[in-house]
Image (cartoon, rainbow, N blue to C red; front, side, top):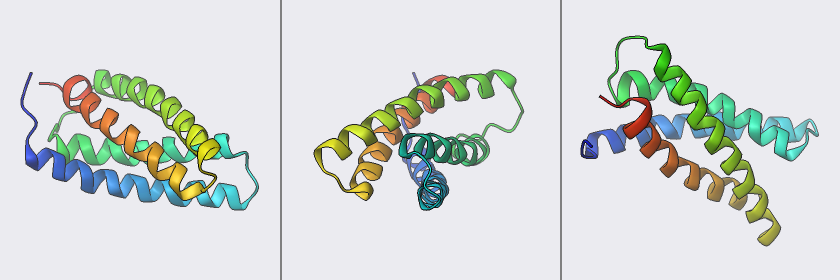
Length: 125
């Protein structure tokens, strides 16, 4: 297993921050139009994941070639973490009924899982 590099973590956080902004904006927009909260969260998470794939593949983990296997692994990872994200969001809201807190807790959990999954599974060398 390769070591975690500070440069990768910092780039992941910048790329992830961009993806989270996309996630949050779409989530709030869908809620504004009275979408179901769980559906809105899953859709917004998928949109953020797409942005994250592009940034993390080419910038964070510096993988320049297109490899379909990476896309499939990324989709599998984000499918799992998307479900976890929605569950954590729902559970947090059942304890503390503040949407931003649910969003942030769910995002924090999925961020850690996504970094580790991308580093050691999706973009492995």
